[in-house]
Structure formats: C-alpha cells, structure tokens
Image (tube, rainbow, N blue to C red):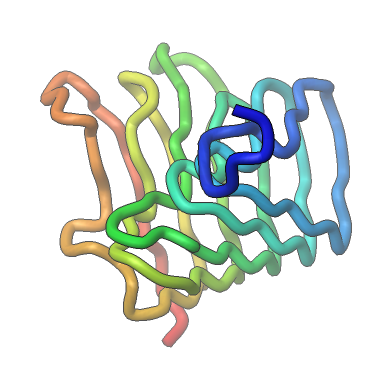
Length: 151
C-alpha cells in the first residue's frame, strides 16, 4: 500500500556494468539495495535496512561502508544470488562497519552457491549466533567468510 513504512520495497537497483558509488546513502527496510548484475564499487556509503538490505547477483566490492540494521527482531545484511559454482559473482565487504538493532545474520543464501566475504569489518553486538542463514535448504552450499575481523 502506498505510504506504508517499514515494508518491502527496493530503494535502489543497479544492473549495469562498472558502476561506482562514492559517499552515497541508501535507506529502506527490506531489500534496500538490489545489486542485481554487473561489477560495482561502493565506497564510503551508508546502507540502511532490516532484511537482506543488500541483495542480488552482482560482483561487487563494498569498501569503508556502514551497514546499519533497523531490524526489530531478526534481519540480515546481505542475500547473494549465485546459482552456479562457475559464476564469478559475490559480495565483498572490506573495512566496513555493521551496526544497528535486532539480531542480524551477516548473510543469507539466495542461491545455491551464494558468496559473501567480510574482511577487516567491525560487527556490533547484533550478530546472531552462527551468522549465516541457509533458508532451511541443506543443499545451499553457500559460502561466507569472515577474515580478520576488526574489534
């Protein structure tokens, strides 16, 4: 319904190749930023949402970004949609900050071979135990990697 706050709606979608975003703010609830297809670079951006607020099948680097959860109960930062092990897609979050409210998964498997990497990233105390949600599909061979987390 028009005017309803906190519901699912894409605030921004990118599917072109070789896009660069610097110092941008993306605000929404569920499915804030649709990183659909192509290679993208997000630098010094602020992305806010509750569930899968970064999602899609892009091949993207998020550097020095803040990812802020507005989830009331449970949410997730990213849902990556890689469906084939040979696809060269995935999300890399480098030197980012994950903050906010609610219990939060760092990622969810939107595809059978989802790929999300966090390197040198600060996580607030909102991360749910285990950190990853496979949407109750044991066949989701999804991968998420947490590398040398900053404290």
